[in-house]
Image (cartoon, rainbow, N blue to C red; front, side):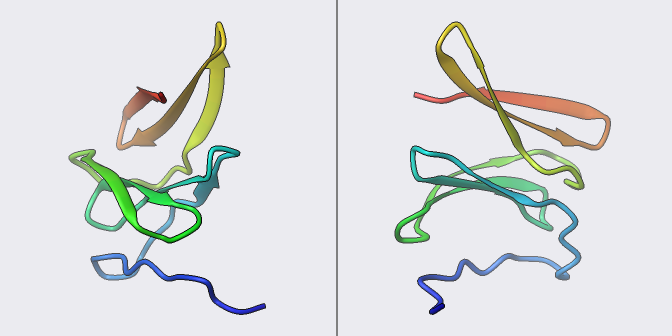
Length: 85
């Protein structure tokens, strides 16, 4: 197929984490500079980023509690969880 969009990742290109896409058309990825980035799946536009303060080697995951969706990701020895709207 054709490439629809690309998002340049900063750093030395040693990315070890995978990506996660949701039915809500969001793409989550960890970059080499230690940020969790959220992209629009249709356009590739950066919607949000969060500095994890350390390297990200794990892939993001999603889960639901009482009907609310969350995304979690491990960075270093910490696990971060974010609620989605």
